[in-house]
Length: 114
Image (cartoon, rainbow, N blue to C red; front, side):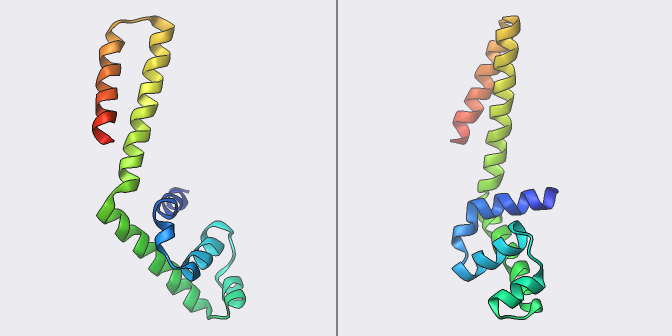
């Protein structure tokens, strides 16, 4: 499951940088759950060609992430937003003044990321 999530995030952020041919085959195999054989028949290429293209696309997408770190930044921002959400809910429920400084700290971290 974690692998599929990683592929999905990488594709969401960097998929438009792939060629149309790469995008079509990658979508069919990874997201539409077609077999390599089905895609090979549809595209008129070998099963091995589909396999190689999927591996190459994974490598390309991972390479973009290693250079740009957009998914990493997104995941950090998401975690901080979730933390802020929990702090806000707790504050509304308890009215603990100590939570305000923690909320300020998290919001400053979020602003530094943007």
